[in-house]
Amino acid sequence: MAFENDTNTGRVAKMVETFSLIQKSAKSNRADADTLRVMMRPLIAALTNAGVMGAPVDALMGQDAPTLTLTAGQRAAWHLAEGRAGSDDGSR
Image (cartoon, rainbow, N blue to C red):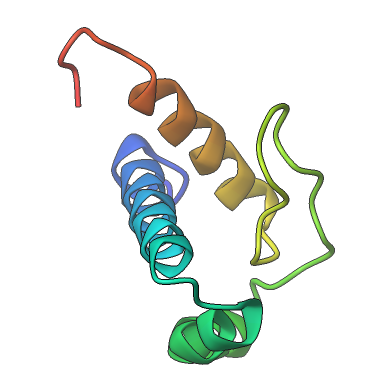
């Protein structure tokens, strides 16, 4: 089975969605970027150790710049998550 499939894309989309919730919580609690970075340190370390942290990506149109650096596959999942988040057809 190929690695780049709907299952793994969905998993990444869920991670992006979860991170969005963490960012929302940080904003609601007036946490600064350093506090968010400390909270995300285990995930950042895991991504770095796996070798998936790459060059910075451009922010999606109308979105704040991502806090984490995403690979091409993660960017694709991000786009997918954005599409799902905006759908009202109950397909999530």
